[in-house]
Length: 382
View 1: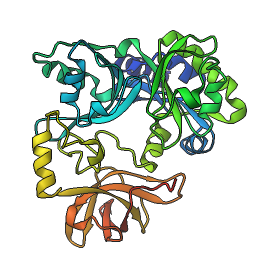
View 2: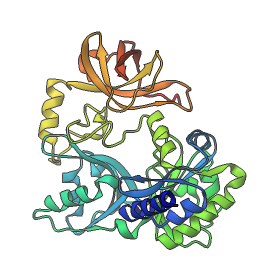
View 3: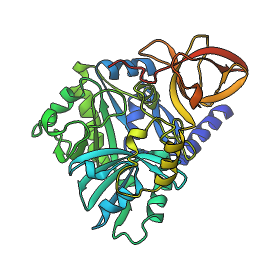
View 4: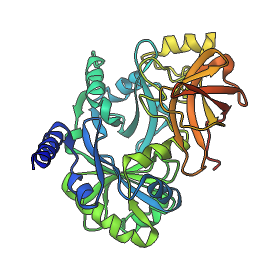
């Protein structure tokens, strides 16, 4: 009896310590295995990582990503202010489009990676990583200076779900009666006030974080609860499944999509992380971190992100050391047994002079050096 009391008390304190998304009760009712992730109670899985992973690759999966942070920047200087913060170039997109970028510190390290939704030149909607929301918001305020902008953290009033997979469009189109998703919401664009069935109006975008087609839907918690049930109901015949954070990580990893805190952080620059395409060093805007990143590129990037496949037994976990003989040359950023490929693969950051495809190396796993080979980090052949 005392043991049961202890478990109930622990669960009560656990639930109080972490935040709940507006969809928390859905995860419980649908049988999700809820864990504390970045201070949020979220499902790591429902039926299981592998079946959920395959559902997204072959049909569709539905994710609660309400823990992500949302920040609005409005005012006559909104465009110039945001373009000063990010490494990408806002001049390359128009209203109704989305741009992926890095937010760098003065040394060229990464504060976060994010998406900027351009509603207008004076109205930007920014989506940041959950664990970094407070840090990023403080960074935004710190950099405000004399820019005429109003910056708001609206994360607590915003719910977000992601419907991902090759059948995502077909499923969502059943609810989006007045919008032709194929033509009106193309890749990296968005549309506001989209009516989805009888669930309400939402902001709908099409960016994805799985390597598959898919949509992000933003709205109120009440409307999102209705939409969650409705998508799972109408998408059942097309194989849609509720999915947890476990397969979200394996999916993005297979698709060579980075995760903050793994492939990049405040000391791993975007150039080292293989994200140079999103760092516009020749753009006119003098963004934060531009000078040290320019210097690094001119001198030669010292470390590079590359793929790895274990040829021995084990899993190359985050932080594991990579060796060439007796010399330590790098470390693992992400590693899994790939559900799609059936191989043990990883992302590693290694010394630039060792970052050659075909280079035979070793990964330290449980105090043993396991043989591996460096490969392209583009694991999926799509």
